[in-house]
Image 1: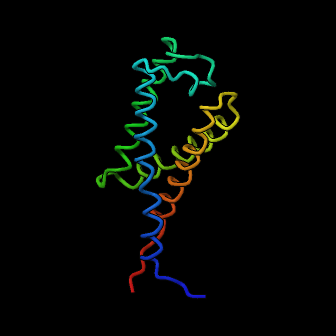
Image 2 (image 1 turned 30 degrees about the vertical axis):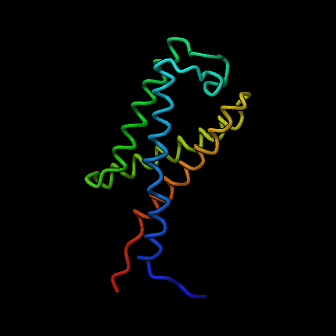
Image 3 (image 1 turned 180 degrees about the vertical axis):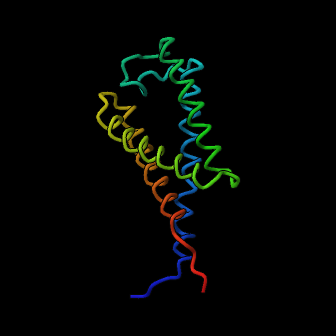
Length: 139
């Protein structure tokens, strides 16, 4: 079995890891739209609200949108300190795993679609952490 140099493996992992900011931006945009009054209540918060969300959930969506956007900006920046990147990455893995479970168990069919998105975030963030921990081959 042929083994590949670490620089090849790291490049492949980084391709997957680069998805984290994109996934977070998409999740941020969805939450921002909910906060702004988009009639997508059935696709969020267990689908208990058809149409526009009530005020308290719109505030929660606004906070989630800002959190996701900040995480995306932090992960996308090359100036982010490695310790901060690892902390954000671990948070994304946790949010991804919890989101996968919560969305998959939702009684709302449209909301269950987000379980795949959350799973992709967990995998992508995990790969980002793995890539950051590997040392490049110096040969």
